[in-house]
Length: 505
Image (tube, rainbow, N blue to C red; front, top):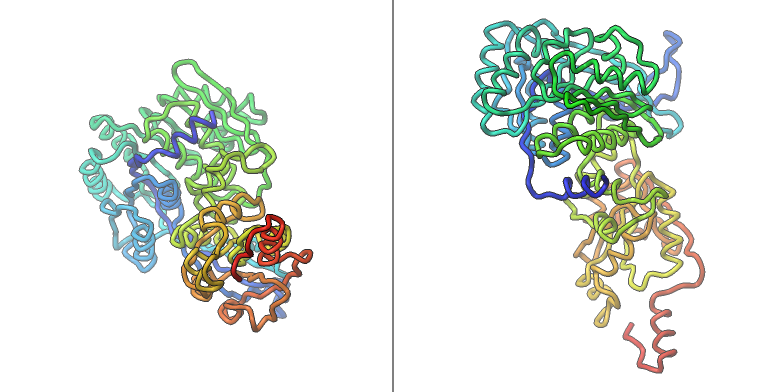
C-alpha cells in the first residue's frame, strides 16, 4: 500500500477539484500572557501577531492546493472587508474563484482565535469569537450559484461539498448539485453537517461524517471501532456509494455498496490540535477520487493526512512533500531511501513556503550555514545541537562557486550536490538550501530564523546576519565545536598519508 500512495503522490498530473460550501475566514491573534488583569481574574493577552487563514470549505481548498491539485471554489461571501480578504487568500494560493459570489445582505463568517504563550512555551488556544450569518442563502442566490457551477463542471474531475451549516448548502442545494454533477459525469463527495437529514446526500460517491455526526444521524452509540464499522454500513442506506466514518484515535471505518467493509487503524501520534483534521481527510479523499484512485488507497491516504494534521496548531495544510516524506520513512523514523533525503534539498521558494506552514503550526526555526566540505564529527555534533534549539533545522549551504570565492582554487573537495546529499542524509537536518553569494546575509534576511546557530569560535557580533535575526525578535546561539577537527587539517593529513601534494589552502 505505501508503494501505491508514493506512486500516486509522485504523478505529474494534477487532479482538478471543485470545492463547494461554506468558505470562512479564520483569524488568529497570537500573543504572550505574562500577567492577570487587575480588572478581573483573567489572563491578559499581549498581541504580537495577527494572521488570517482560509477556514471551512476554504481550508479544504487550501489543503488541496498544498497537495498540488488544481482547485476551484464555489461559495457565497458577504460583500464586506472580510470577504475581500478571503478572495485575496484564495488568489494567493492559486484557487480559481470564478464561482465565488458575494451578497450585500450577508456577512462573511469569521472565527477569531486567541492564542497565548507563557514562558516561551507552545501557544495554546484561549478563546474563540465567532461572527456569522448562517441563514440559508435564498432560492435566487442558490440558483445563481448552481448556474455558475454548471458552467465549470466540464473542467473538473470531482466536486467536494464542505457543509458547515452556514447557509450555502441549505435546503435542496446539495441534491440539485449532485444531479447537475451526475448529468455532467462528475462524482460528488461530501463532508456532511451535524444534525442534517443525510438523505440530502443521496447520489454522492462518498460521505465522511465523524464519530459524533454519524451517531446523531443514525441515532446509535459509536463507542468502539466495530460500532464505527456498523455505522459506515448503515450510512449506505442514505443512498451513497461509500461511507467513511472518522473515529479519531480509532482510525477510519469504511464501507461501500459492493459489500466491502474495513477498519483502517491510525498510527498513534502526539495530538496537538484536532482543528482541521476532518477537512484534511476530505481533501485527501477528494485528491484520490479526482485522480481516479480506488479504495482502499483512498482511505489510507486520508488516514495518513488526518493523522499529520492533528500534530499541528490550528488549520495548517499538509503538503504533498510531507506525505511523501512520511511514506518513505521506516517505523523508526529514519531515512529509508536516498530519494527521501533528496526531498530535503529545496529551492529557496519552496523552503519559504514550507516555513510559512511550519510557523503556522507554532514551530520555531533554527538555522545554521557553512561550506560543510568533508563532513566530519565536529560538523555532525554542531548540527545535532542546532536541531535541539528549534522544532526544525535549516542548513544554508554555500554553492561550489561561492566556496571557491571564499577559499580559493581547489575548493571545494566535494561538489555542492554531494555536500547537500550528505547533509540531507542526517536525521537532524530538515532542509538544505544552496546559496550562491559568498555571504549568507541575504539568505538569512529571507529565512529570518528564530535561532541562528554558529560555532563558539565566533563572537555574536561576528556572526553574519545576527542583526537581522535580532531585529525580528530571534537570537544567536554559539555552540562549541566537538573535538579538534578542521577540514583544512583533515585534507593535509590525507595528503601526507597518501604521500601526495597538499591541497592549496
